[in-house]
Length: 204
Picture 1: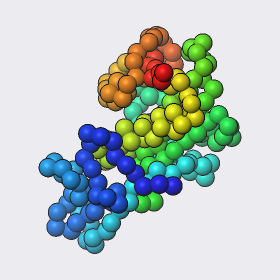
Picture 2: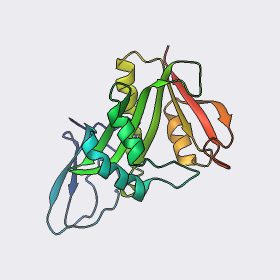
Picture 3: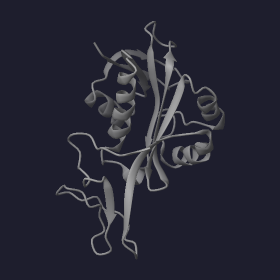
């Protein structure tokens, strides 16, 4: 468990990485001129965002997050109970991290370390990054992505792969801004009309 560090170029939280909700000013206490509106609460509360390793006990929360926030097909293929159980039943090759606002799961990312399906090169596949709709446009998708990249670089991983629907422009922008390049395109990967763009991030 650790306190969240926002990436360069996004609004910064205070030194303890806390989000403050104020009764009179309904916004996060960000050090930026543009404040993101949030609901007003009767009592002033302080919120800490943290990244935690997800476990099998978190499956219900992940499904709920994906149900309410992940895009529909063909943009994205939501995880179901079977797919999530596969992740947590294979901890040597599959990993998942969650982004929390206090005790609320507001984002998650998953990756696996035995990626061969679409490339002869050995590498890691990032299989999911989803952020709660109410927390978007704050750089939190980049936070999860950079956390995964950092962990993989520590483990001497040289290639990171992922697939995105060509219709999912937001995801394509996110990954391209973080150094991923397109290296392939395949049609009807997940059924008629579910095409996929293949991206790669390589380290020398």
